[in-house]
Length: 345
Image (cartoon, rainbow, N blue to C red; front, side, top):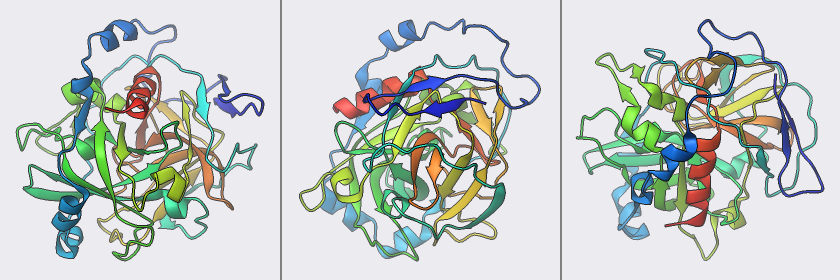
């Protein structure tokens, strides 16, 4: 496995790479990636990565009536065709939670049930549901979490939650994006936060698709991560009001806890749910996975490593992507996107 070591004397930390758990067949060949990430990023216009909203917070809140929120459909594809994607280039950077560094923690138990998450701690205020629309035609819901950053305004979710990858609406960004942290039974205990702008990788926008059966296809699913800049509420930035979880790039963990709001089958989207695992499996396609029964709606929910169950705090290493669960590894592409979002429009 890879292990996350947090250095107390510096702002960032060192990620030490060790041996991984047994991988699925078809994992990438050993050795350096043949991709030139620097050239790919150099050719990307900032406008290709982001959308800046023109709607006001009042307009977004007026759009999301209680009926629209109740009828919003969970947005999450089934696992589909697996595409070989060279592993993203590593970036050894760790940003600590607003509550401070988290030391070594006990391995989490294996629990794939999607049970109600009751030991909330910092997750009570930093994890919630996002509500999005596409061209004002249909409402969808996903999950998201607040992450610490220099700007203090960032939210992490899955790219497919805010980008119309299916082409059903001609391919477009989402609009009317609303975040409700701690969303429980339709209540908004920590306010209704609106997005100022959002960022998704060009790799996902161009190559993340779904087939006729609703399954994910294309290399883009190896980069299913997005960041949103949130507007202030009550005169405070989102991390000032709610706190922020840590985030680690190119690091998986001794164990993983995933949170989200599944809303299909045995789940109704009204409460935060959780799965955990002491191990993870590396897949081809720049992703990793572990067993979890959460359904559509948990998309964009955080994967935490070095997670303290009692305080509800840890380091985000991925977000829920396709069902199973599968998540994208956060390497140089995700790090560059994070830095762009942190710097702002």
